[in-house]
Length: 160
Figure 1 (tube, rainbow, N blue to C red):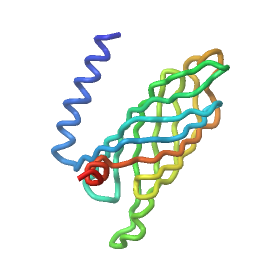
Figure 2: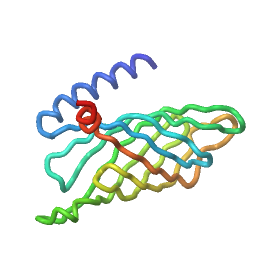
Figure 3: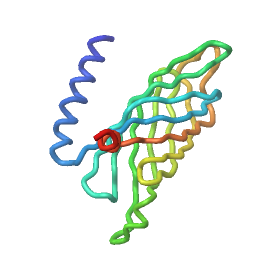
Figure 4: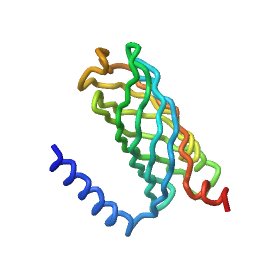
C-alpha cells in the first residue's frame, strides 16, 4: 500500500512539472460544505491549470469533516474538474463556467456537474456510489457541494 502511494505521488509530481511547462498554474485554498447523506465541512487546496480561459482544469485535495451516527468522522477527498465556457471575445460571459468533474473519498465516488462563478464560487451536484460504510452509514445518493476557492495570490496581496 505504501509503495503504491509513493509511486502515485511521484507520478503526480512529474506530471505536474510537465503540465506546468504548457499551462499556467494557480494555487487556491478551498473551504466549503458538502451534503452526502450527512453534512460535512470541507477544507483543502486546489491547483488550477489554464492555457486560455475557455477550458480550465482543476485538481484538488481536501478533507471532509462531520458527524455521522453521533461520531466525528474525517474523510480525505480527491477531485478533478473541467470548467467550460466557449464564448469568444466577450469578457462578461467568462464570469461563469459550466463544471464537469468527479470526486472520490475512501467511502464513495461521485461524478458531478454544476456551475462556477469566476472559478471561485462553485455549486455542484451529483450522485455518489458507495465504496465502504462510514461509522455504520452507507454514503450513497445525492451529493451537493458549495465551495469557495480563494486564490493564494489574493491572500498574499492582502497582507503586503
